[in-house]
Length: 313
View: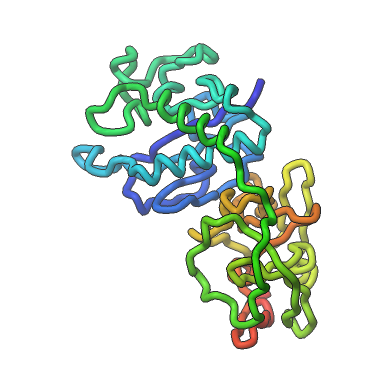
């Protein structure tokens, strides 16, 4: 049976973020907290196997949940992330059906008839009203939220993705790396030329993108800093064996809008917390050098951009 994507709201403030509950949480930005290839235990009752959960941080208003409604930006990000996952699984727009993409309201009311259980969904569907995520997309809106979301996801899948590696124009001159935490571009990512920086006292080959950011082979960086890892080709995932690493869940992670196949670097643990994402280019995994340094606690100096030693490592 194909996997199912479940769409949730977290009944929280917009700023809520917690690992271990949903694979991805959308606040103002997308936080991909866990690998989509692992199962989390408790996002959708009796439906956690062969499933992923994407949630918007919203609807936590008291006493009226609608005082913190899902924003239009959150709903669009939810649909885009779902479309990106579907595309990575080679789903077509015609395969975005209720059994494959469901709101928690629909799952709670067993609208697909897959796994009969007590109806804890919306009252209008004969349930207890315990879960009604995305029954409506706005206050007093029609109870067709799931249908509306699936229609938008179909539209996104039918849109033509920008070709990766489009011409980038002149190569940016080597210089200081953009400041940590700066915004990422929504433009398609392209590369033009290579240079070298110093990392742990040795030269490191890097490639510059159209925003002037440095990228390097993930395996080269991990080996340079003696960090054990395993490459899972079937999942496009690097599992890290380090025990002293706590992912920061940065808001400016690489997004599917860059137009390249993505890989993820994750902890080698049951939940596989995502550390960072990069792109697959020339059949190899590349990541942003500065993001790698920030996540692994590596000291950095600018002018010129240089990686030093790993703090505490």
